[in-house]
Image (cartoon, rainbow, N blue to C red; front, side, top):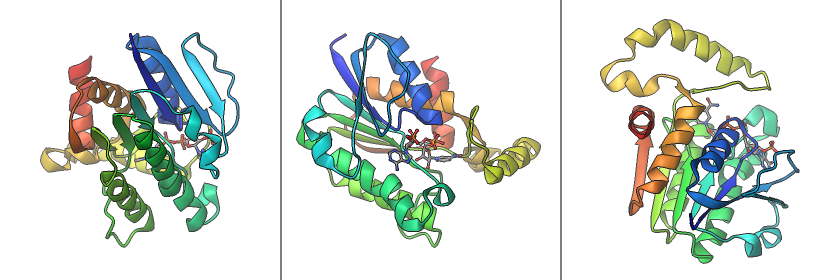
Length: 222
Ligand SMILES: NC(=O)c1ccc[n+]([C@@H]2O[C@H](COP(=O)([O-])OP(=O)(O)OC[C@H]3O[C@@H](n4cnc5c(N)ncnc54)[C@H](OP(=O)(O)O)[C@@H]3O)[C@@H](O)[C@H]2O)c1
């Protein structure tokens, strides 16, 4: 146990699951989380820093370790505007990644989205595609992009669109076969397990994991 992990977005649905996975794994002697407001979670191996995401100087010197995980994100509705959404889903992850690369972090893993494409006509998917492309330029040993379909988990906040999609996916699940398998909704536990598993494989280069592959990686890691 000599490794240190860093998570941004650790208070979210997937991030909090990933935090649990990392803390129970015994692979990391330290898990550092960067948050905008303090959480009540405490653990002997957890270090939590409350920082200003708009000001990289507030966190640059606190970055240390081996593997960084980004589970940050918002919705346009929650953020209030496309501009505010872009900050959370593009600017913050890239700024953190730049600082992490300059501090010698080897691996960067991020949750993007199924359908991410920098040329998409859809703003959400275009932003996800753009973050992938920006990260690709950075000098990490490995960059792992996870593109899940609809996330399943116990979200405290009510998101009508996601609830409707979840319901529809349950009904039509049997039709998602072959290439369509990647559109099946996926639990945040599986996404977190896959992110953890891949980080232990010490891969090199830029890799994209589609939702059906995430399912397989998570199953293989259990
Ligand atoms: N929902 C889906 O079905 C779906 C599908 C595919 C991909 N994704 C992507 O998967 C990722 C994880 O999604 P999730 O649903 O697990 O996320 P989530 O529950 O919405 O959590 C988002 C995280 O980002 C942080 N965050 C949001 N706005 C912030 C801000 N302005 N400054 C600092 N931190 C901020 C939150 O911190 P606070 O706790 O402080 O708010 C939280 O830790 C996202 O990138 C999302 O786009 C989601």
